[in-house]
Length: 339
Ligand SMILES: *Cc1c(COP(=O)(O)O)cnc(C)c1O
Image 1 (tube, rainbow, N blue to C red):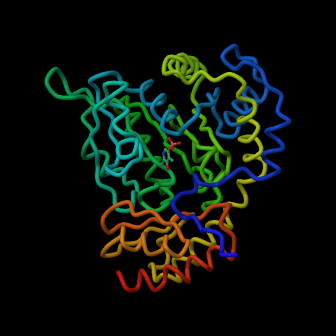
Image 2 (spheres, protein in one colour):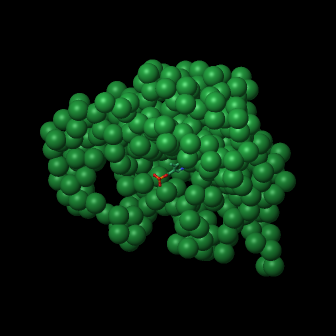
């Protein structure tokens, strides 16, 4: 039998474990559009409490969660400020513009790392009748395309102060906030504090098959619930998937430390500079990323070529010790050749 495929394209490729599937099968369900799904309600209450917010809304994807948050903070014709490789501006297919009439202005951030000075330089609050006004700032933690960067707490605080001073909304794309929590040892509620809206994903490293959660105050979440239905994402017996999310919160947060350790080990094997791998993502620059990805695929190791020279490898709960060793053995000669 040939070795199983090692899939490092993303932490979204994780499949529900037998224990998670059994939690799903046993879930009590009701019609969530009527507010009757007990697992869905419990999940929302748990995530709100975990992140220190009043209320939460369960949605099918992180993109929808982000976009619901953003539309609550920025009106049509107004501007969102974010970094130029933020998921909200790079990987949501123009959703903020398409659905909410939001324009974006971006700052450049090395490895996605937040610096309040970069934000201060580009925002234009209350720009008057001719120039577009910035009305919200989005922060991403950890930073996906930056390579799993954990945002420096003092810079997050400085951006929040800047935003407050100018009356701007603050959104946190915390798709991998769990990883920032495990890597930094900072409580989730501290990492999530001080924003107006926060989005977290259950379907990444936590291993749930589907689902993200938006948290905010009760009034905003009530409004988001209306927009969720308007967008066609009012779901019914969501207990089956909410149970997977609750299982993930219970069982799969602490173990993210294993992914982080494997990511550091793999980076070391591939000659990636020590200290650049903070969580579960390894990014590296090669001369021909698609060629490396194709050659690795031919040997049963899947990686993402996210640009002509940009490779991303993501560790997750379906890649064990032997998987990461095999990935290193296959990738080492390829990236050395291509570097
Ligand atoms: C994955 C991800 C999302 C949401 O992605 P979906 O595929 O829509 O669930 C949002 N932000 C970041 C930073 C992500 O990595």
